[in-house]
Length: 338
Image 1 (tube, helix red, strand yellow):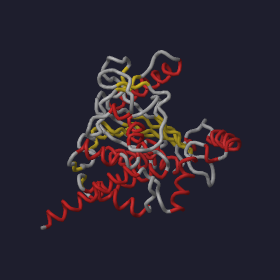
Image 2 (cartoon, helix red, strand yellow):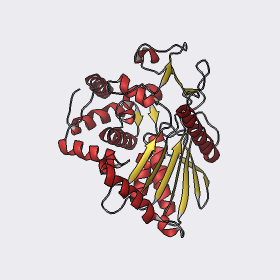
Image 3 (tube, rainbow, N blue to C red):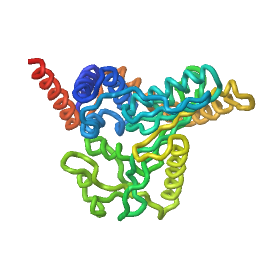
Image 4 (cartoon, one colour):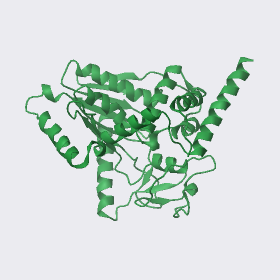
């Protein structure tokens, strides 16, 4: 591992992204989201995504998502020409606008991918006093049988809510899948990980002897994640993955690209709800485990520690790739200037 300063990491990441993403505002937003994920320990959605984004997107010019349907309680955004990170952020902002006028609202990003860390969009909603729920689909990645084509995404879901005065928001954000593509990508890039609960296969359907066998020579995922139905845990995961897939399709329609749904409400403006009881549950568990073990609290604690330290530990090989990308873009820009 190496430990460059945070300003240096931010500079290199922004330079690398600016070589293939436009406009500059899109680069700023993606940089901020990837670095925040890294600070919170979510390596699967951190700076490992930069080489992957270049490979997946190529030259990409972000266009703002367009409203395809707008009702008092529902906003559907068409995101085919949008970068998912920015589309999801716009959905979160529009949701806050809608909630300033009513107690409940839903925002949908249709055909939006990649959208990054779901909890990143739920947190501002919770910090403004709302309860927020989100769920999303991704391109099919999970096979239900070893010899079958992928049919489900890893489909994250999350819940966020205020956790009381001077407490970071409670943010539970997780994929029901035994392992996600992002976790495999992070491990391939040098971060620690555990494959103990995952069933994996190469493109030929064989168990891999090494993680690298699941990727081609350009680090594109060529293997399969098998969603087991043979254990009680596997069946529970499968049921939840199916539920998220169905709910997302209900709001966004069918797509193999991926979509995201955010819904939020103000419990103080909905008679019959008990927000104080929900906060008491969080506080009771925090009293047993300490706040840094509460969902949302753990990432916030790590973020504050790294910000205070001023440097970020990264695998040496990943840091080398990021520098190479950044330097390549600087050289290309200089050549274009000549």
